[in-house]
Image (tube, rainbow, N blue to C red):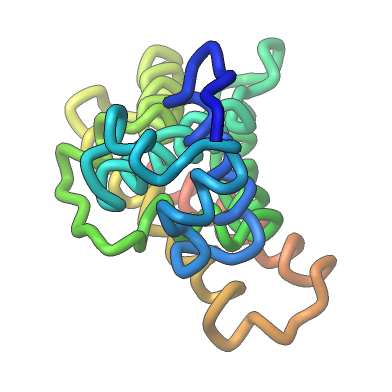
Length: 190
């Protein structure tokens, strides 16, 4: 196979994104990624020494996409911006279960620092900073509030994907998601 890519690493991650979108982590193999990128399997090793390194790059690309969808409406009040961020996270998980699985359950254990460094968590932290700046949550409680919010939206998404809410119609999942997000926002504001 001839190498014709301007940026093979990007082409390999793009192929990995396409594979994992529908098939989750199980679909991510170096052989299939390189086949889709049109290069030999050995070519991938110049950029990713193993499947784990490729998985990490694909997961990072997915987490960036999660954050892109979490951009709050600029003219909303602070609580409205936080609500937008939380619902966008759940929406992403429900719309992209393969990617959600790879990003958070892709064979590695994420520590608190790993999660806090993701663009998605930073979007949440920024929305909470806005709420603190508006005087609606104590600034020294913002860190614990961030984990409470994260646990709520992440847990809710898991209930819809793999738990008792999986069989519930999408419209009802969305209604329940809004209720969960509104409840956590009310809780951190009190």
